[in-house]
Length: 240
Ligand SMILES: CC(C)(COP(=O)(O)OP(=O)(O)OC[C@H]1O[C@@H](n2cnc3c(N)ncnc32)[C@H](O)[C@@H]1OP(=O)(O)O)[C@@H](O)C(=O)NCCC(=O)NCCS
Image (cartoon, rainbow, N blue to C red; front, side, top):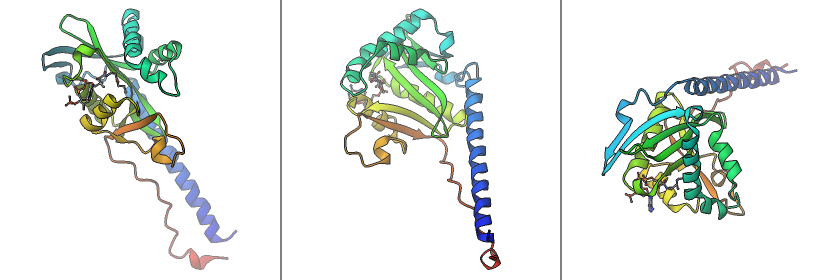
């Protein structure tokens, strides 16, 4: 084997090793975030939203700490807000699937109560790896009608961005139906999310339109793709 090809193998191995190290560092960040008792606790100023006629208290917990009655409300609100949108997509709506997703062990919740102690909005989110990148994934932002268009949604997404920054995650990501125009306007215009590089429509020229887009807000600079190591100066002359 010539020197050049030996170098190539070395380069490939080094690149692979660096990639594995990158993934394991990303996984460590996700694990550390998931091990927290209350990721909202450092953000005391963000545990209440007293603006535009609303008096909302915000708490954060894992799904395992949410009682059954509240989880029923979480499901019912999601169904009321989303069923028609799901039904008019190729995904369709199934109570069982949504209940399972909302109750998965990895689920975290921001819960909002109004001044009478009534649940009025929630965020379902997860600390996760997405395409080898550590992210905060927004699964649901759901609000009762009475509390909408008063800045609360944007406030909650801001809390998510602050958490992502504090826990050293790279992006806040969400999936939005193309035909959910209010939500698209909310994420793109109000919260300054952009089409993520992993969104199907960003990756390929599609023959048929896809019913959703993956949107994201970058928190930390993108990890620079690992460049192959430069061959040594004398490598070209050292062929055998
Ligand atoms: C989408 C949602 C989370 C936004 O929360 P919110 O508290 O109402 O949003 P904010 O008040 O912070 O921001 C409002 C902005 O969002 C967009 N928006 C939200 N609802 C809208 C509507 N019905 N029509 C047009 N724009 C809308 C607009 O850009 C609006 O800005 P404006 O009020 O200055 O015009 C909330 O309306 C909701 O729960 N909707 C139903 C469930 C849903 O679709 N969730 C998202 C699933 S991905």
